[in-house]
Image (cartoon, rainbow, N blue to C red):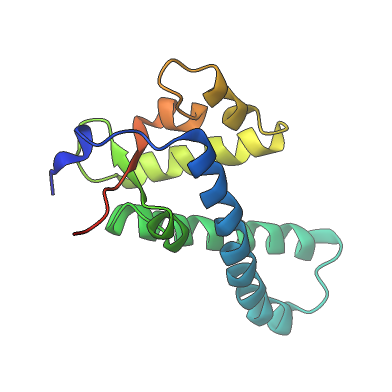
Length: 145
């Protein structure tokens, strides 16, 4: 599905931040619901191997959530609301490899005080570091007539 993603303008920094705040609310609900079966089956996950397994499980849930949306339409619900779409630099659909790389780098950027996100303030194309390294970009989708 090659489309006009190359011709679409990039999403502004403030729009991307607003979408991330909204995404945080949605992801919180997803993680809350996803944690229930794990905690019911395993029990207390505050320490030891259960804690590590729980963290890995939640990371897998997050990756499944984002990669499914990114690969299918390039948009999560929050991205649709703010009219932002994830696109490859050449306009082709996002691959699983790009999803994994973008997800891991964004997570690492968050853990480093948001360094990957602050990068956009200094980048010549205003891209996040994880988008630049994964070969993706966030574009602004025009309103439907």
